[in-house]
Amino acid sequence: MSAPDAVLVFPPLNILVTHPELGIPQLTANLRKHGRTVAQADANMEFMYRHLCRPQVLERCFRELAWRGPRGDFLDRAARAMNAAKPAPLRLKLGRSPSRELYRRAARENLFSNVKETVPLPELPEALRPLAEPGAWRGFVELLDAVTFRPPSWSAEDVAALSRERFPVLEEFYAGFLDRVLARGAPKVFGVTLCSASQLIPALVLARLARERAPSSRIVAGGVWCTAAGELLPGFAAFFERFDAAVLHEGELPLLEILDRVDSGRGLEGIGGVVLRGRAPEPPAAPIPLEALEFPVYDGLPMDLYPMPTLAVRLTRGCHWAQCTFCYHVFPGYTELHSTPKEGVSDRHLSRILDHMDEMHRLYGRTHFTLSDNGAPGAVLRRFARSLRERGSAYTWESLARFDAGLDEAHFRDLAASGCKELFFGLETVTKGELDAFSKGIELEPADAQLRSCWRSGIAPFVFLLCHPLQPRESFHDTLRWVSERAETIYKVILFRFCLARFTRAFLRRAELGLRLPAGAEGWLDPFNVPYRAPGELAIDDFIREAEAFEAAHLSLRYSASVAPSASTTGGLARLGLTVWGRWPTPRSGGPEA
Image 1 (cartoon, helix red, strand yellow):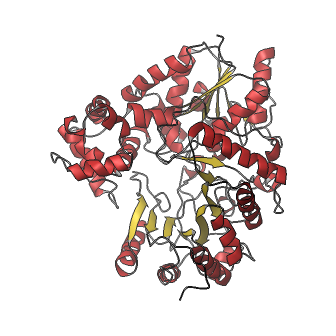
Image 2 (image 1 turned 90 degrees about the vertical axis):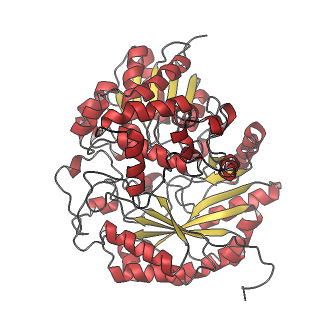
């Protein structure tokens, strides 16, 4: 059997991925539609949940990675580092055996599944037993990322220097991985998709090894990290030591053109949305209309390894609002041009989506779906819900949502009746002046009413809050107080500290917003988290104290993301998530709750 035209890989290390990302599966389906042969693989899942969790590999991590820091026992240093983090993502209890109940909890939550299937837990090395605690695996992987794959800074020089080091545990995994995905020979294109900066070093290592194994292949990068960092890539020489090109925005048309160029022996110059060494990005072509795209396919992916048994579907492209100053889902000058109109999508498109969901249920047994839309209009969500009911589908689903005007209780009842279980709303702040300054386009009173309606309909409402640089301490207190007073109608609150993403309106308007970049920040290769300074911003330690005080005084909170330790931390580098847990809503048959 001949080599495929393309091999597409999602690299380590991204612990936040809990189900297959849409990018590669959708690219695969659309390249195949045009007659191309494609193999796809998720190296991220395989590395984290198949390779890394083997006891002998864990022991090697602790043994071989010790040289990266001060001398001494790596496990002891790991425990100290993790316990010192605020909040501590994991407390390693060295030498303490886990209880049988802890083991049962880990098994129920499907954590460490490969270990428990191959090695009885009591036989794990004593020092590694605490990794079986629920939630501990994420903490360990975050620590591994921080110690191993995170450069001292995200300058091009530091990233390049780290990428030239050797990573025995990762490279051992890649050796077997490449044996498998290149077993049929060198593809014309070896594609690597990056969603976050945490994947950059592993992706550069993978590209180097793929080049050694398949020197005739064009090594191409893509994904949202490439799009966000696109302006920086032409001058990032170390990147083009490993990659031949990078694709920005949606990749279906650029990849088809790259394959055509490879077939005809032509260069890659002048392809829309493609970046080459030393050349400014070519303007991207308009993407294929959403309703003309093939739906994603998942053959080749380790479907048994994803922590959440859900798949993503997309009703719309972009965001019908697309004006929020801080939003890192919107690329000004691109998203507005190619977003689905507010009036929505065709009945045929909705019917095709339901056909796809039926197929995914038949193939993989999936009954829960996540809408990957950045902000589907309320009217589109309601049409989707009614389509599900008309077909008699028994699926459950969740989605991001906006506090669009005119959404009444009947709207949320329709969604709930179709299987909607969770809606994630962006509120950010309760201060009108701040909502207006950030162009949120929402009003507090209708938002409050919609949260009550959502709860009474049996849907769990999640609310995002944002502690931002322009927010006085009093406004932060007002927002927390407002949320605490609505503990009976908000299932969960997720509180983030502002991060400056380089492509957002906030970055473009940073002088107007009083955000100053320290030296070197213009070329920062974590484009979602550019360091900045803002006079008067609530300091990170104060932010943590305020959140903990709120926890003690009002609601039961826990951290959902840790403050990442960094030697170069300045205001805004650390991001913190908090969650507020409440009771699960019960659908009501009558009027408002007494």
